[in-house]
Length: 188
Image (cartoon, rainbow, N blue to C red; front, top):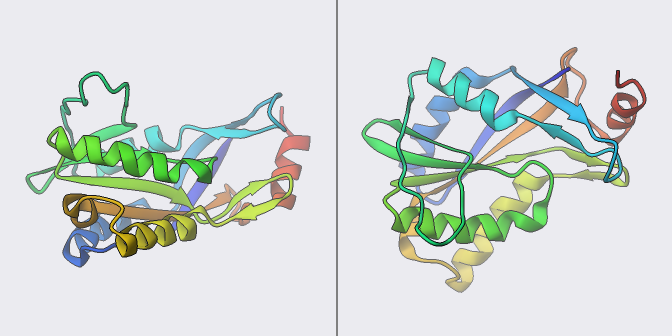
């Protein structure tokens, strides 16, 4: 079973970096990615969005990058790639908006370990049993709040990009709480 990602949107405090990343994601519109419905945790939907995205970006011209992880920290990125002479480290937060600040912490370590830029992928519509959350809007707001209060290094603010995407079914219906219930009921 597949979902699709569409309507990608890029946010960064560094507009030239945002423009570069925006150009990469133009070719990802309508990208299909596999998902499954779990039997625990309120039938949580899990997906291989990050794996499908890495494959699609390779089709768009990125190269897989060898990234030296921060030693002794236990942090692992979803994937890293090289583009235009820069190393990008990517995290996809698909189901827990509370982890956005934790991802920002990991970004500091990735940048300290040699990454040139970091990308956080967040759905614009994360449906769950009690409603829908715009994780992309939350991530942008949290980045702005961190910047406002100085909660982060200058390199972090200069090198962080947040990419939002809308999740939809293969037939084009926007993934909402009601559509999610339908997917749970109709799972094979």
